Length: 259
Image (cartoon, rainbow, N blue to C red):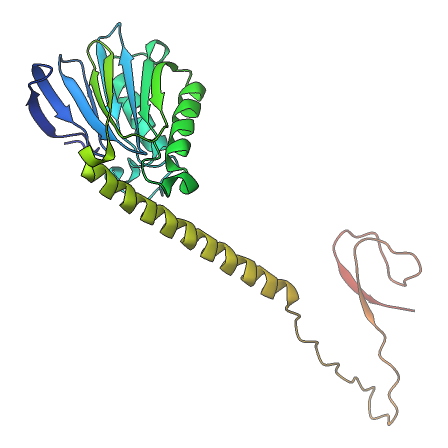
């Protein structure tokens, strides 16, 4: 059984008169069946990719553009665009799709809450989707991104047809709750990153100002003489050094005394 977060909310869609799957955040679904994939987006982005020759397609739903930690579970990593896009593309290729035939339609990335404009999650998600697909050389043939309205997206993976409906926030209270929680998580993550950066900067500053304790000199005596002659300094040499007795041509370090 796959550990990937494949959407499991199957139902019969009366509006489209066919079987459907509802995608929640961090999920994806791929198929060649005559069915409809549906999701509701706020600042999140859904990429719908279709291979018209193979008659297959799929959708993902990611929340943030940045990469997750390598140790995270797949269900947690799917919230990040880099992982969600990679999974969707790879699963379509496994089904017989060809990257050079893929066409994409992308939706979402709205600033549905007033405070979200300062965090810019929606804008970042939208720009990430465009940039990622451009790097993968997958053509975007339609998009409905950014703005201030939540969206309901319906995608027919077998034909590539997609429909989008703009919503009022009051129509989807779950979107508002999700956006508030996401904004809180992003703010906490940003504060944690800043705290780590400050701690690292403080540690480096402390290290750069630290000085090792000076070694105490040891007196050297020649026999039982009351006034010892000053000890001749010892010098580490690499190879021959002019003016120093005993300076040979060896490449290994040696210790000699000054004349």
